[in-house]
Length: 508
Image (cartoon, rainbow, N blue to C red; front, side, top):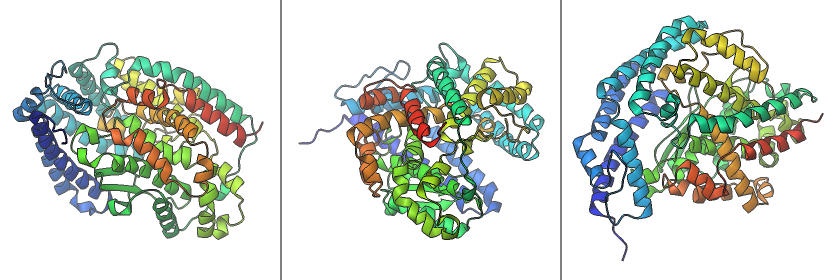
C-alpha cells in the first residue's frame, strides 16, 4: 500500500497548486505580451497583470496560507514541526517556509511603491538608452537604489547588504563566496584572453552577410525538432528578445529573434532557450505546484541553457552532424566553407561591449564587471552619477576596450531599471555549474562526442533529467553540485574547459 503524506502537507500542497495555477496564467499573459499581443493592448494588459499579481500576493501572504505552513514548520525559525514527512516533503516544506519568510519582510505598500517606480523607470531607461544619455535615467536609478538598500535592511543580512539581494536568485551564495570564486576566474580569463590576442586571428566575415529571414526561421525550427523536446508540449515563436517561459511541464514556450546579418544568433538562441525549456519539462509533473517541481535557482537554470548553447551547441561534435543542414539552407553563403573553418568562426573570441553578444571567454568578464559595480553601488562606495566612468574604467581593465557611448556601456541592460540587483552573478555561475556538471557527464559518457556527432541527443537530456531535473528543489545548488561531482562549486572545471578548447582553436 502506497504511503500517504500527512494531511497538513496535502492541504498545503492543494493551496500551493491553486497559487501556481494563477502564476501559470500570469506567465501566459506575459508570453502573449511579448509575442502576439497587439501593441495597442498594453494598457488593458498591464491592468490584467497588476490585478492578477496583486491577487497572487494576497493568496501567498494570507492568514490561511500562513496557517497551513505553520502546521508544518515555524516560519520564523524554519524548524520542521510536523511528524511523518519524507525527506522530499521536508525539502518542500523548507522551501515553502523560506519563501513566506522572505515575502512577509516586505509590506504591500513597499511592494506597490517599488513596482510603480520600476515600471516608470523601465520606460525612462528605454528612452535614455535610445538617446545614449545616462543623465536621463540617473535620477530614477538613484531612487531605485535607495529603495533597494531599504529592501536589504528589511530582508536582513550578516556581512554585506548585497547578500540579501543575491539570495533572491541564488540562496547558497554570498558576496564573500562570489569573491572567492570570481577572483581566480577573472585572472584566468584575462590571461587566456591575452594569449588569444597574441595568436593568429580568425576570419568570420562569412557569418555576417545577409541571410534570408524565412530560411533562418526554418533552420531554427529544424534544430529544435532534432532536440529531445516533445512538440506536443512546446512551441517556438519570435520576440524582440529571446526568452523561455513555462506554465507547466506540459506547456513550455520559447522564442528567438532573427538578425538578418547575424544568423548564428538565432540558432544559439534556440539552443539556449531550449535548454531552459527542457529543464522545466523535466520537472516531475506529479509534484507540479510544489517546490519539488521548481528549478533549484537561477544559477542552475542558467547552467541548463548554457549547457545546450555552448557545451553542446558550440562543440565540433554537434556541428559534424548539423552543419550539412546549415550548408543546405544557405548553399551560396556556406556551401564551400569547410566544417573546420565554420567551427572556428562560431567560436571566435573578440572582446566586445555588449554582454549578450559576448563569446565564451569574455562572457563571464562582463558579468564580473556588473557584480563589482552592483556591490559598490549597494554599499555606497560608488555613487550613481559616477557610474558611466566606473563602467568605462572596468571595461578597460577587464576587456581592454572602452565604450564610447552610454548605450554600449552602462545603459545596455534592462535589469537595473527593473530593480533586479543581485541577478547578474547567476549568469556566470550558470557557466561554472554547467562545466562542473559536464565534467561528471563526460566521465560517465566518454563516447558523448561520437554519439552527438551522429545526432543522438536524447541520452544527454536523460542524464540531466536524472541528475538535476527530477529533483526539483529537493537539493539546493551546493548540495546538488556536490551530489553530482563530489566537489563544491569552483571555477576549475570551467577554466579547464576553456583552456583546452581554445588552445586548439587558436595557435600561437
